[in-house]
Image (cartoon, rainbow, N blue to C red; front, side):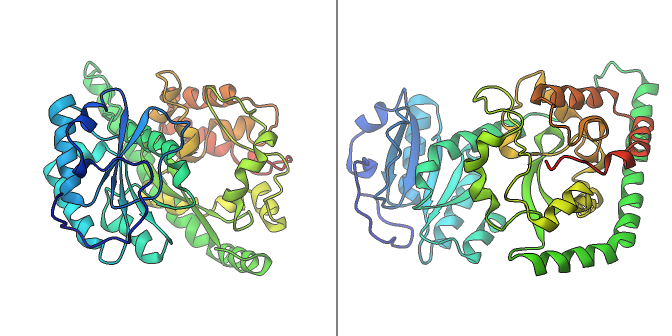
Length: 386
């Protein structure tokens, strides 16, 4: 048994989970056709039985985990499918050890890393900023969702490692200068316009914030991770237009999705007359006032005024084919080709929306952006509650 180098964790009853530190190398050899989930600490949990290709390996501390990872790399030239680290008093010491390990082993940053905790506190939430290798925090209640989280985070980490889209080196010098000049104009316009609009809209934003607080409990702003240009993930801001626990009700409303409910291919999600939307939220959405906070994203450089809409991660993860991924060549934007041609129309299919996004990606230019901006006002007011 390895000597413990991390703080003592709360004891759990180990249930059908092999302890690598108490076994021989035979356990490692059995993993050749399975995905290994390395669980650091003591757990009563195990992955659901409907994931036969995943196998749990239990170690007591970071030092033991490092030995298992070394054996996996030495014998099979592979890494764990994920690491789950148990949170308890003094666990920051263990995270510091993980930080040092990831610094020495940069390839390990491709492995999903989760914290398991009994209760998600503000301190635990702050760890994602303090230790960037932490991908998510899970609890006992959400432990059964771990296989799905592993596949999702793995897919996004692979996408983020793709090199950024660049112009072909064979482009003429004049064309390269034109592209750089177009980008300079676009970014300069974004900064000046977003800063000016935020200043002008500040009284309206204050009134909206007061109205949201008076109508329902919850935060004034809604922030969620979105995927933008080249699958870059950033925090996306809007005024909150739904009830506080709207995300938890999503699964109950899948049958109302106007894009359909196919399990294969591209996935978009939008509900007509969504019951989670508040009365004020319905007005904000139909007048596009809920999108004013996105001007902060534009000012920060996460988005542009014109581009393809940044997608929730569960939608972006379905658009990874060579053809569909083209829509991520263009910057994320507040308005764009889709907004002025199809926004709010119920008959639009997921494929049609992707085609519009790809169309813009190939025609993206400063002049085209100006044309789209001039045609945006008539699209701001939508009739359908979607």
